[in-house]
Amino acid sequence: MFTPELKNNADEDISVMVKVSNYSGSFICECGDASNLTIKDCHETEAIFISHTHIDHFINFDTILRHQLGIQKRIVICGPKDIAKQVQAKILGFTWNLIQENAIAYEIREIIDENTIDYYELIPPTWELKKLKTVTSEKIYKTKKFEVDFTILDHKTPSIAYLFKEFDTVKLNIKDSGFKGGIWARQLKEAFDSKNENQEIEIEGTTYFAKDLFHLLERKQGDSFGIIMDHAANSENHEKIKNLFSETNQVYIEAFYKEEDKEAAILNFHSYASASAKIMKECEVKNPTPVHYSRKYNADEVEELRNEFYKALQ
Image (cartoon, rainbow, N blue to C red):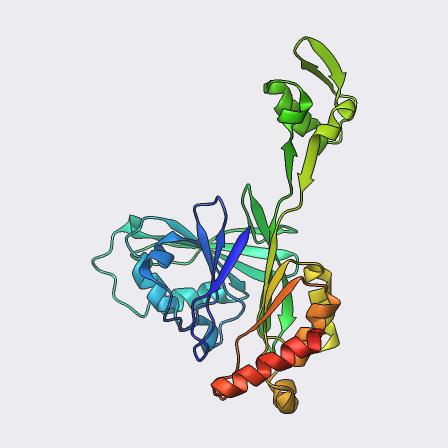
């Protein structure tokens, strides 16, 4: 299960921490000026996901870097084309004569297009940008428990939207089976996953076909969480959102402008509250949440914006 938490106050630039149940690492989405992002949060971070490198989404990378130095971990950074050079440029703004090589390592995954990802590495003290490989038709991030997919939206610059998708799990009801646990349980789950109905499974001296035991299994659908940041509220972007985020459990989506400022949204390739809500409704997202508002709004205006969003969901 994914648990997202805003690490910025309402009047600050966006940053989201994503934690995963029964998983040791956590994830930062967007490096805005987040006053609630702690040193412990930075130490526990396994990967950072950046939509684009406008200042309000990337300004706080320096602070995260400061807190991660010396933890001797390999941190993955995912983002749009050119982010590898931009991360390197930030790092090279400092002097590194006293740092050790094993203090930190950054692996940068640069999204070139919908099917191509370039991998780079940055290691102190020289921070030379080393190209590792190019992969095609792969997820941007994957663990044994979940994977992260993406799509590229138009914000007058590529803006990456990310989908965290937990793998489905299969649970065996041993109590109702009448059998004792054993190797057969693992064999049955493997047969179920591979759809091998006729695999023979021996239990307590008796051989069964796997299909005759499938009724003992229950598939639990994995959780899903999406983060959709700056994007123009146009048909092309909305089609990409629908293709990736349909029936997602929870999505944080930018709602930068109020309805009355729709013209400013169009001019600046941003979305606005009602448009973000409508695409979430079309996607049948179970729990859509508006985030990332223009700093020109005061607290009362932000509340009006949020009300517009939730009204458009109805």
